[in-house]
Amino acid sequence: MTFLDPVALTRELVAFQSVNPPGDEEACARHLAGLLARIGFEVTLHGFGERRFNLVARLAGTAVGSPLGFTGHLDVVPLGSAPWAHDPFAGEIDNGLLYGRGASDMKAGIAAFVAACAGSIDTLRRGSGVHLILTGGEETGCDGAQALSSDRPELLQSLGALIVGEPSANRVLFGHKGALWLRGVARGVTAHGAMPDQGVNAIRIASDALAKLWDFEVGPAHEAMGTPTLNVGTIRGGLNINSVPDHTEFTVDIRTVPGIEHGSVCSHLRNRLGAIDLSPIIDLPPVYSEPSDNWIARVMELARPFDDAPSAPRTARFFTDAAVLKPATAWPPTIILGPGEPDLAHKTDEYCRVDRLRAAVELYRAILDDWVTRS
Image 1 (cartoon, one colour):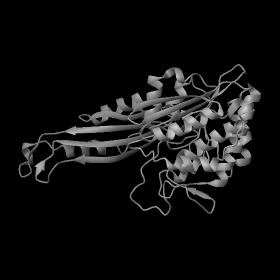
Image 2 (cartoon, rainbow, N blue to C red; image 1 turned 120 degrees about the horizontal axis):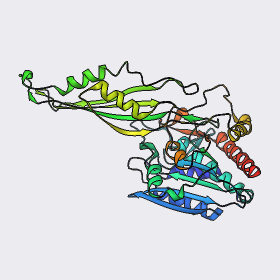
Image 3 (tube, rainbow, N blue to C red; image 1 turned 135 degrees about the horizontal axis):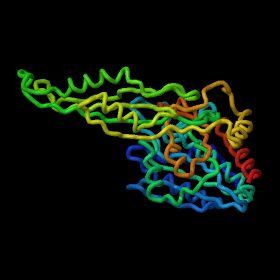
Image 4 (spheres, rainbow, N blue to C red; image 1 turned 60 degrees about the vertical axis):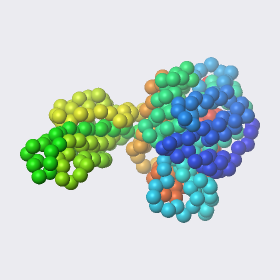
């Protein structure tokens, strides 16, 4: 058994400025690689760009069966333009709150699981193994997970179950919506602004297309996740006021639920929008596991004492690396479970509650110990 203080480790991880873009997860990944190797994990670093890294750490067990998996991401989003009351990379603790970019999303989750593994290391060796998949580039569309899946699939063997340590306030979530981000391009013919009849206005083409989006039905609702959504996030067109614009782009953010095929959505949109060139930016499917699964039902029992909002929704609106890793690891039952505050992700003065961080270690250890007894 090795004791790791999850609070101290979270502060160490927050200090690494792995802001994405550009990412720069290398220093954070190497720090964790050394730590996990000392605990007893076999560690592999996978580079997928300049100073961009994934980390896969595997602890073998003596029991027959598939290992338990955990995944988290090392990158964090930019700080934004608003001033912070606390240094975003110092991990300051004030009134029981640990502040910093990535404190909730999601370096606290990584620290808690690593600390739990360290505390249960002797027990884990008697089980079927544990795999940690720590990625870069999640915030910009699961870039690291996709690179790992395509470049090093041998590192992503079948898992018996998968925990995603994204912020859930220590509540078990059964999945998340999918993300289909699209870029639409309208092309026209330029002309002098005083003679618009001699051109074709790309902004008008785009605006006519956008009018057809507002009442577009993405698909049916899901019992647990609710309705799919569609939002037009940006539109850019024209270079100067006195010319007819010949190029306009807009972006569409569609969040899908299980049962909706992204290819079908794209096909219907292309038919509906006519002359618009439509191309995907991000294409990540929804993730959902049935709560009746034996392992998930057991985790729900273990997590009940830690859940201070039992009637809240059991799915997330954000996407996670599970959209890539669940199919890459043979579709294991998957949950989202982490100490971070989901409502504080990406916000100024982001923090994680210290008591929730310590509780997450206790909960993760209970899940790990239970996994060994089932091996």
